[in-house]
Amino acid sequence: MVFSFPFAPRPPPQEIFGKQSLNLCCSFPNTDQAKMVGASALLMRGGAATNGSTSSGGSPFMIAAGLAAAGAAAAAAAYASESPAYASYGPVAGYSDIAKLKSRLESAEKDTAFPGRTTNSAFVFVKPAAVTPATLALVEEKFRSFGIRVTGKGSLGAKAIDEQQLIDNHYGAIASKAVKLKPSELNVSEKAQAEFKETFGMDWADAIAKGLVYNAVDGCKKMGCKQTDMEKKYWCKLKKAGPGKNMVKFGGGFYCGKLADDTFVINGFYMSMRSVFTTPPATLTWYTVEWPAAHLSWADFRGKVLGATDPSTAEPGSVRRAIFDDWKSLSLKEVPNTGDNGVHASASPFEALAERMNWLGASCGTDAFGAAALDAGVNAETLAAWTSDPTVDFEGKKASLFDLLEDLSAKECIEKMVAIANPKE
Image (cartoon, rainbow, N blue to C red; front, side, top):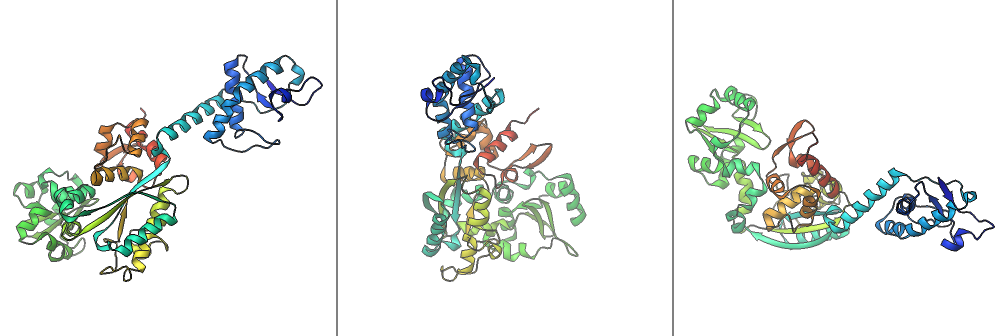
């Protein structure tokens, strides 16, 4: 039954419950249900009505106000039940409204307890070639102009990056194939093995058995060159297609090149990438930053604040575009390019967590986003395993975990992580 309380000869309820006319939706006889219905009606109307107007939505403050008014709502229900003449029209709140209220309350409580749900937190570093006082000042000013707060700042030198394999962990699978794993440990698909045989006239298994395949580190030793010279002396001369093809792509970031009749090398390009960070006196400057997800999406952070990977095509006003346009005045030695574009930033909130764990030694439980993910039901073991960007099953397909989470803001990212970690049967 629906009750409302207009002015009437009998002492009007607005004199008892307040000056504003009350519209209460009550379809339950007991007090507890009436309280929930009253609060639900207030919430659905956006909190408290003023001069007959309503607002949409409902902030945590309005939700609290709705609950505070629930007692009055219950009393009003009892009052009206004594006089059916007071029954009139009004919005009806039922079980579905109560369910919405409960969900909104739980979500508001979670947002308060776990700020990592509503705050985007990224890891950013200025690459060694761009670390100048002027560049750092530019980056920090860009953060301020977009309402992004710097929560931490520091630097790391080539020695630490090399010895702790920080850049190798950062580049994940690409680096593992070049530095950490031996070719016999690699998972090469049947399709890739077939292409290897078609290109080189040899079975992949035979090449492995004969010891002809090397990772990039061992390949440098075999060819008698410095790690910093592998790219310019050998790798850049390989051909991916056409007559004389001598490089095969096994997968994303996974290449095999023939450097000599008895020498195949995996991901030889990586050594020059690595040397940028590990050759003294190289240093990088890192930042941890955060901002309200409601004010700036992760996609806009990457597109509008950071800028496209190719700095020459990055959006005007973005960090990478500014570094590209002003590289001389920023005291850079050469013009930035796609490979060395001035600055790196995480592609998703989860990648940011993985990067903070790698570069800064953060832990899931104490990191704001990590704590929120744990509370949502993704366990610590899974989070740790995911930092290496494994291939996962999602919606009937296999895909890179990082690709699935790319550009999602914090709450959406957590929701998708939960769906991946706990697929519905």
